[in-house]
Image 1 (cartoon, rainbow, N blue to C red):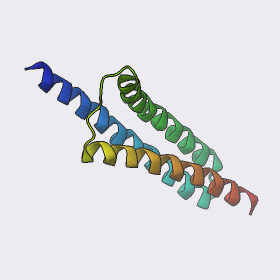
Image 2: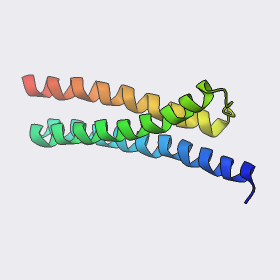
Image 3: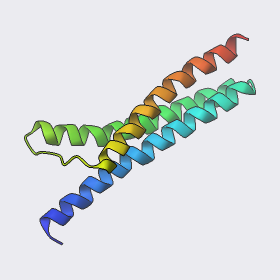
Image 4: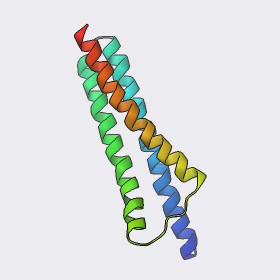
Length: 108
């Protein structure tokens, strides 16, 4: 395997990490909302914690890319990269909204 192919494989793994962990975080946030709808706030909080953990894993992937680019090693922009970043940003927003929705259910 050439160096370029290894580099591409590493980049693909990093991007897939963004997509997978972002998806996991969003799914956990949705589970938190569903649990709150059923007044199961312990489960809701557990799901929000899982969402945070998934977001942390996604951020580690993102940080690797940012560090690489900051050190002068250009990161190739691709549609897959944009998709991965989109997944991460949507997951962060969705998790933040889930926190608020869980709190709303707690007050009713």
